[in-house]
Image (cartoon, rainbow, N blue to C red; front, side, top):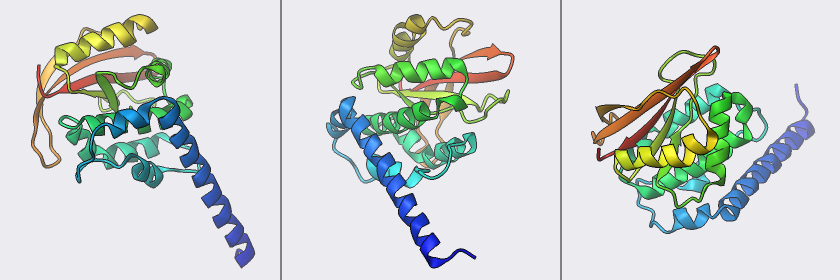
Length: 215
C-alpha cells in the first residue's frame, strides 16, 4: 500500500499539472484573441462555461486518448446542439477542441492535423467553428466526423470552408458536399441542415460536416 506521504505527493503533483494545463489554456485564449470573441456574448444558463468545462475534461497526469475524445464528444452533445443557436457555444467549443486537439495532434490523421493547425491560426471572428473532433481512430465508421457549426447559412459556411481551409491547405480527394436535413436529438429537437464531405486513404476514413439552421 502507498504511504500517506506518497499519496500526498501524488495529489500535489496532480494538482500542479492541472494548474499548468489550465494556465496554458488561459494563455491560448488570451493570446489568440478567443477570450474577447467568447466574452462578447453574454453567457446564458444553458451555455458552456469555457474554463470550468475545460477543467472538468482535463487529463493533466495522463496521456490523451481517442476514447477520451469520444467521451468529450458525448459530454458536449447538449452544447453542440445549442451551438446551432448560440455563437458563444460555437466559440467556446471551438477553443477547447482546437487546444486539446492541437496538443494531441498525433492522435489524428494528417489531413485533420492540417485543418486543426489552420484553424488554430485563424481569426477567432470566423464564420464556422469546430464543435466535434473525430474520435474513431483507424476506423471506417462514418461516425468518425469532424463537425463545424455555423450561424451563417449552410451555403456560406461551405464557401468559407472552401476558401479558408480546403484551398489554402490544398486538400485533395474530398468529395463534393452532399446535403441532408436532420433533427437534433438531445432535447431541443431543432431542425437543421448538414453538409457532408469525406476523404479516403488506406488507413483512415472520416467525414467533415458543416451544420446550420439555414440552407
